[in-house]
Amino acid sequence: MQKLPDLTGVATPCIVVDERKLEENLILLRQVADRAGCKILLAQKAFSMFAVYPLIARYLDGTTASGLYEARLGREHFGKETHVFSPAYTDAEFDAILAVADHLVFNSFGQWQRFRARALAAGKVCGLRVNPEKPTQAHSLYDPCVPGSRLGVIQSEFRPDLLEGLSGLHLHCLCEQDADALAEILPVFEERFGRYLENMAWVNFGGGHHITRPGYDIGRLVGLLHDFKSRHPQLAVYLEPGEAIALNAGYLVAQVIDIVHNTLPIAILDTSATCHMPDVLEMPYRPNVLLAGQPGENPWTCRLGGPTCLAGDVIGDYAFDRPLAPGDRLVFCDMAIYTMVKSNTFNGMKLPDILLWRKDGTLQLIRSFGYEDFKNRLS
Image (cartoon, rainbow, N blue to C red; front, side, top):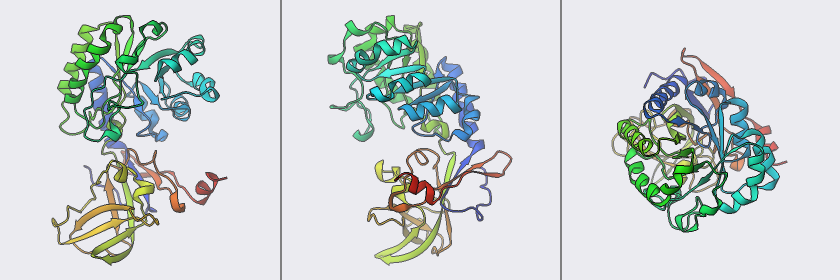
């Protein structure tokens, strides 16, 4: 990691995105796409900082969206291919989605029957999400393949008689996983749905591929995709990682505003887990803090908590070389992904400013938020 810029003068809380690290991730992803003969899309659900879309568009093939607003953002600021998947489209939004999407993926044959004529008349590439029913994760919250999942058509519900007009299959099964998980999924997918691929033009293996994480087995991923394409040479292959694009490319800067004591010291920050880094509570996830370690690793251990009224607005326990004091600044790592897209104004909390740390070392303020941003969401 390169040395951080001087952050003493920036207003907190703020998210700082590292342009250099972002481009390093993109270069690696472009290399993987070229080696594997696949296309890679930006999954905007993890990272939608459109100020850097021109940079990302130099390396990736398009965007994927979960609904109308993400699709519009991708079309307006990224260009290239715009893919959309939704668990269920609505009549009210479907025409607007048709105006910005290239690829449409349907979650059920019922939705396909409902919107098929309009999608095909608009000249859209259409696909169906399938569910191979092969769980690979410890946390069921993030596994679309668990029993009872609402995502994707399972084998017993598949309707070969309704495939006309569909040109691809989509499966999204992974979350922060290595290529070994894809190796488990592919044989099950081909066993259950492979017979339908001969009449298809593309397949999308979704997101969750942690390609830019140190230690990820890129060679195995490339080999798996080459083997798959050797069995199905007519298919274009898509991947749509979200985290991999901006992994380790962002920081959240916070300030200590008070220290209280209850069994152990508790530092109250101007940054909230529930408002500014919700994955800390949802995953759950413990972000690294610069110059801090696990409890007991350094002389002074304290709990870091947010300023909201939620009792559970706690980030975690950390150990420092010295006691913290009001005014001290803390830097949380890997805060570009699932932060800006999930931030909220519960309790009237201020949204974090967004800054871009340029490759030339300068800091550029992209957006600052205030009272009007809170107020306008509620009126």
